[in-house]
Length: 509
Image: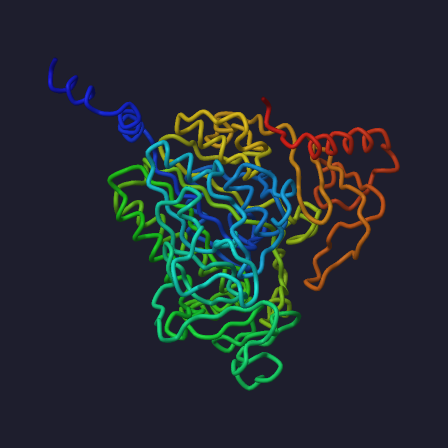
C-alpha cells in the first residue's frame, strides 16, 4: 500500500468525502439587503441614486428580472431562505418582535446545515430576525446576560455576529455566537415588549431626547435618540451606534472571509441597510439628495464594494459564487420622519412594478437578484422565474448533496438557471403577503381577501374582496384586473394555489 492509499484508508469515509468536496467547491457569499426595491439600484434603472459596486457585479454576472423573495416582509422571507419552505405553512413566522423565540428549530434541515455537511465553514453576519432562545416575552423572557441558545449556531452556522431582530426593535445590541458583545455584567440587560421599564426614557415622556421622530409606531423606548419598538434597560456599553452599524457588520463579514479563505466557506451577510431607522454613517450623509433613504442605499453599495474588493484582494473572485438580493420590496415611510417621502422626487423604488413591502402586488416580492461567478457564469440578463426558496435545493446540487425527501418542501433545484445555463425557470411563483398570489407563465392571480387597501406606510396591500387576475406580459404594473373576462382561468389558478397550500409541499417527489 502506497502512502496515499494508507492515508485514505485511515480517514473515515465522511472525512474523505469532505476533503474531496473541499477540493472542488466554490465559496458562496449570499448578500441580503433589507427593504431594497426592484427600482432602487442603478443597474435596475434608478437614476437618482447610483450603485456602482452592485452595477459592476451585475455587469460581470447575471441580472435577474423575474426573481422573487418568498414573502413581502422580512421574517418569512428569511425563514424560507434558510429552510426551503414557504413560511405561510408554519404558524409564528410573521414579522417577529425583538424577543421572539427561535422559529427555525434545531435539527431542522437548513441551507447552512447542508453546506456545513458538504465541508463548508458557515457564517451569518448582520440582521437575523428569526428569534433567539426558547422563552417568551416579558419578565420571564430570554436572559440576554448569559449564553443565548438556541440560535444560529444550532441551525447550521459555525459563526454568527448578528442584530437579534431589526434596528428599530430592542434590544439594540449585537450578539456574537452566544453572547451579547461588550456587555458589562454589572449593567445587565432587560427587555420587555409588554410594558415600559421604570426609570428608562420613553418616547412619550422624553421627547427632548429625540433626534428622529416617529411617523407611526416606534414610540416606546428611546435608544440613541431614536424611538424603538419595545423597551430595554441596561447594556449601556453593549448598545450599538446606529451610524456605525454598516461599518461594524461589514467589517465582521470581511473578517469571516479573511479567516476562512483557505477552505470553502458560506457567508450569509444580511445588511441592515436600507431598513429603518435610516441613519447612515456621516460619510454618506447628503450623498444622494434623497435624504437618509437614498444615503442608506449609497451606504449599502459601499458594503457591497467592500465584499467584492475583499474577494479580489484575496484572489478568491473566480472561485466564489456571489449572490445579491433583497428580503422584500421597498417602503418609503416605514415609521420615521426621515424625509424619505419629501425627497423621493422622481425616483421609483419599485421601478415599473405596483406595490412594495407588505403588498400582494409584484412590488412586494420581485426584487433585485444578481449572480456573479467569473469564469463560470457568463454575463447577461435572465428573465427566468426564480425564488429565494430555491436556493437550498440549487446550492445542494452545486455542493453535490442529495436532499432528504422531507427536507426543503418548496425548494426547486434551479442550479442551471442560477448559473445562466438554462432559461427554464420554476413552473410557478407563489407570493406571500396578506393574500397569497400565484404566477404561472404570464398570468398572475391574487386570492380574494377583505381588508384595507393601504397600510400606514402608504403601500398598496393588494387586498380585494374578489380575486384579481393580471397578464404580466402586457401589464407588468398590474393595472388591469382581467378576472371578470377570464373566470375559468381564475378558477383553475386558484385551485392550483389551494392545492399547493393543502399539499404541504410543492417540490416534486
